[in-house]
Image 1 (cartoon, helix red, strand yellow):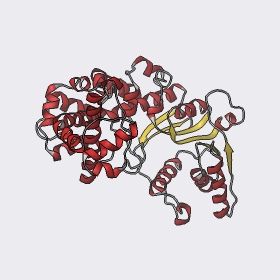
Image 2 (spheres, helix red, strand yellow; image 1 turned 90 degrees about the horizontal axis):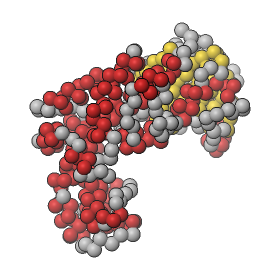
Image 3 (cartoon, one colour; image 1 turned 90 degrees about the vertical axis):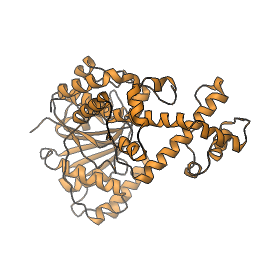
Image 4 (cartoon, helix red, strand yellow; image 1 turned 60 degrees about the vertical axis):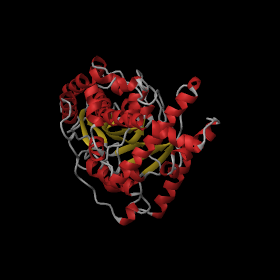
Length: 404
């Protein structure tokens, strides 16, 4: 893949629409809604429930505005990435006690590693937890493996797991309790250096992914799967490549949070539940804005799921009590207020559905920038879809090698 051409094309498509994706719709309302083209909103308002769900899936029904149709088509094409289809079969004993998500991820990672790491003899795993990946790699490939994590309790569980599942040929797995940080770390830095060394980071959180890439400049092989992009800081963490620096986008904390949205298609029940959650949260935000304007944006926080299934008044009363606010309204008045703002809360929902269409493209921009950093460091780089997004939404893998 020509990462430079792909990044330049994506930023060209995204930059004109930054007023839509760079700010919070709810916190900036109603100004945030005014940033959406009127023909986009008119189209979205015309949708029935089935059409809304299709929009949530990234599909446009009926006759959408030409600018929206052209933009979504371009973004879909530019975010289309090849898949790694292989799956390493794991035994019942190897996966005992693991979730379906973890089992799926380990099988995919082992399948990806097998043909690409024949020259590897040692490996290090960042945030390795109980060492499941390290254990399977050591036993499958015969590597000497160091699993690094700052949680000593998780590592103790991993050692007990090793004891219970002892390998006849012996284990070459070592647990190291440490935090992987920027800057010199004489104790662990040598583990990342050497053409026969692999550096692996499975769902490295926020800036930890970049720390791994920087520490792995001397490694022979690097696998990184990032997550929690909302924990990144700009300009420290984006852009990181020279080419990315020449083609930057105005990432904000709200835009970074948008990149973490889930990708799988929702069932009808899941979509209806999402709509109800949004409706109650949006109505509460409008209520607090009108009744307590001096407080600015009031965060309602996460409520128990049962409250979203009931009347708005019950949800609002719970949130008001948690925040220590007295709105001076009866339950009947709270329910009547929710009914009175339904047209506005639907507009908020539709703006969210439209804004979500930028999420994958923004995530891919971050990873293309990292891919270019690795190329600038002399690696041969791949960017692949690795996991089923229904199980693991952060499914994009950066693979870098210095050897054929």
